[in-house]
Length: 336
Image 1 (tube, one colour):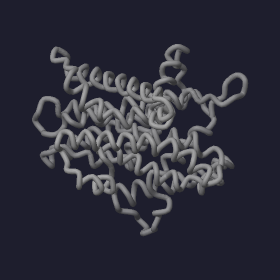
Image 2 (tube, helix red, strand yellow; image 1 turned 90 degrees about the vertical axis):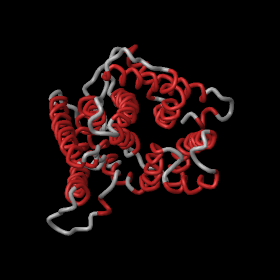
Image 3 (cartoon, helix red, strand yellow; image 1 turned 135 degrees about the vertical axis):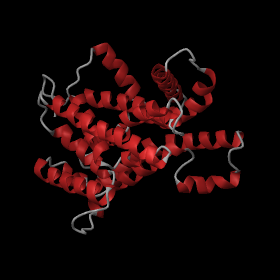
Image 4 (cartoon, one colour; image 1 turned 180 degrees about the vertical axis):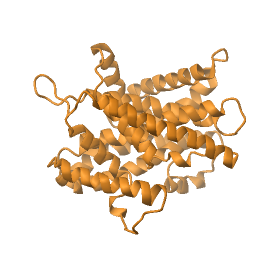
């Protein structure tokens, strides 16, 4: 845990992580559209960006763990506070995406209920369904985590990693243990909390870089090999619950803990990070309805093209989230 000179906990690096994860998830969703067919000039570059950003969702979860697992709250009190922050913007943006699809005749009205049940009005909203399930479980986890017993937390993480690698990723556990209760995305929250309360050492950034590079190299080259074997893009070895993405995510977290930004830059990062949830919800709408249609840069190389498009999507998503926050009465709910 990083503390300032007056002894208070420094949360600045969590703002940096939220900001970075926002940018990464937008870049991930942009790069994925350029990997649809082997042989196109952008295929390998698309996989590069797809791979280097796969840590985004796990890091979002790790930041949530660092913030939410520190103190126990009564379940009903916790649910009220968390669900009021999640559900209004989620329902608002679900309505926007449904209206957008109906307007463009992509769906029929009678398909809407099944769409909402099956995983959301747009593909990226699966994350909210996953988060809601975790939120329901957290009040039963925090009485243990708030004690900050690093040994017991580390033991949990070791069992979770065993489940993640052998039961989930490869399905070849040496012993047929049912570790379902240790599995799933909850492990990322516990990992984020553990790394948050872990005393920071100067050499941690080197460990972080090493973990990230190992995960990155394996993810990229195994994806290239698998994609050419299947004759189509495959990211199955880069699932969020895989050891290589886990290494990348932990690496990013450790490096961020060591970052110190100039005060003006940090102020911008904190301002944007405050709206990270709304930016996540809105970015597909901004990408498809605005940036794709009205912002093109044919003279740029592909790397610069993708990065600049991502920057525009993030900027306009922030402006939209900030504008929604100013709506009288409803703004503070729908802006997240």
